[in-house]
Image 1 (cartoon, rainbow, N blue to C red):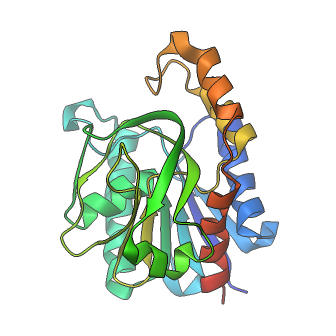
Image 2 (cartoon, rainbow, N blue to C red; image 1 turned 135 degrees about the vertical axis):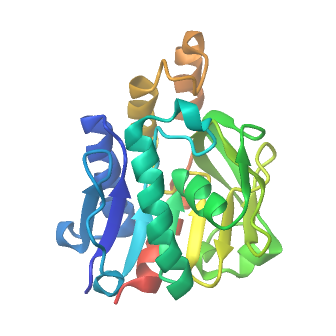
Length: 243
């Protein structure tokens, strides 16, 4: 099998390692089936798209909608490199799944509007499939409504004009979308389980994803959540596109 490519941007070593392990676990992948590139460490190497079964973009501390003057050189470089890669990915309709940060990168690349209107604090939300989502193979086997973990400051307020919206929540109108046949992004995290989200709460406690004073309440709410169904998205992506 050709491996999948994971593009990561998390500088926190523990969180980065946990994200990698979660994509392996819930994608049903062996270690050798996933090549990880940490973009926050250095430039994106040349990518032979034909060498991979598909591409996964993990979450990120970067926000696409940050004012240009507030973006550091690493974020500017990463955004430029991802945009160049997406030029090729979308043109060739290469299998692509962007989790959270993927909404910003793929959404903006394809002409959508990403801003702070529909940010959601760290927690579990009820995600509801649209009619198109119920018919899409990426979401095969998921119920009409399921819980998933979120935590994002920005979101699509206007989807790309040619995008197919696959899922939404009460507080975020685009929880998943597709462009062409094989390029997807989810606002929720299909790779996150309880241990993973608790780790991120600790790592990003002071980064504005939730009021720091509500730390214990956030953890208590997370522990009452059941998000196992959402992992099916990652497994579906791998099963559909492995080659």
